[in-house]
Length: 415
Image (cartoon, rainbow, N blue to C red; front, side, top):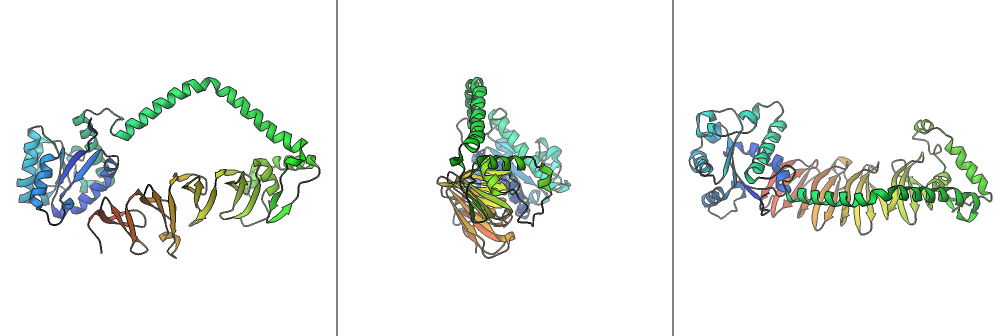
C-alpha cells in the first residue's frame, strides 16, 4: 500500500470477447483486493445511466497501474488501441502510471509499441499456451504485486496494513516472551505438582471426590473402596494402545468404560450417544469430545458442542460467540461468529449450507466443512440446490455450492 494507506488503483482494459479471461484474472487478484492493496476498475463497474465513455476516461486518467489484456481481439479493436492503449502508454511515458501488458493469447503484440514493456506472464508467454493456466494467472498476480512494491518502495513483508499490524504484534509478543522465559520452568513445576496432587490425592485418600458417573443413561454410584477404583484405573492403563486401534467400530461394547474416562479427565458427566463414534464429556458445565478409546479430541472449554451435516462438522459456543470445528478438533472457523444458521434445505449433504454472521457480514460453509465464502457478504439468496445468489459491496453475483464464482459480483440484480 502507499504511505497514506490508499488503495492502488488498477485499471483493466480488454476486448469484450475476452471477458472470460478477465473474470479468471479477477479471481486470482482477489487476495490483493481483500487485503486492500489494490482497487480494481473496469467497464463492468459502470452504473447504468452514466456516460460510459467519460467514466472510462476518468478512471484511465487516475489509475496508478493499467493492465492491458492483449489478444488478437483487443489489438483488432479500434477503441482499445486508440482510446485505451495509446492513452495508457502516454501516461506511462510521463511517469504518471505503470502499464503492464497481460498476454492472453498468441498475437502480433511484439510488433506494436507494447514490445518495449515488460509483459506478463513471465517472458510474455500467452496464458492460453500454459499447460497449467492456474500457474499463468498466479504469475500475473505475483508480477502485479511486485510492480506495486517497486513503484511505492514497499519492503518485502510490508505489502499491506494487516502485515504491518502482524509484525507489530509479533514484536510485542517477542518482548513478552523475553520476560516470561525465566519463569517458565517454575510454572511447569507448579503445574506438574498440581496435576500429581489431583490425580493421586483425591482418588486414593478421599472417597468424597469421586463423582457419580453416567453409563449409557444408568447411574453407577461410587465404590465404597477407593483402592478398587485406583486398581481399575491401573488395569486399563496397562492396555497397549494398539489394542484400541483394532476395536470394531460397529461394536457399542468395546470401549473404555466411562467411569475410567471420567476419572482420567476429571469429568462430571459422560455421554456415549454423541454422533461420529465420539463421547461427549462435561466438566464444570463445559463440554468437550473424546474418542471411545479414551483420547481427548476437544478439551472441555465450550458451552456447547453440536454436530452438523455429515457429523464431521461441529458448531461450538464459547461465551456469546460460535465457532466451527471438524471431528478431529481442527478449527474450520474461529469462535468469533455472532450467529449461525443451519440450512439443510432437506437435501443431501452435497447441497447443505451453514450461514455464519460476523459483525453483520455473512459467510458460507458447505456440508463438508469448506468455507465457500468469507464473511464479507451483505445478503445471500439460495436459487436452487447448487446456485447461491450473493451480494457484496452493493453488487450481486453467483456462486456454486463449492464456492466457485459463476458470475462476478458486478450486477445490480440477478433474476
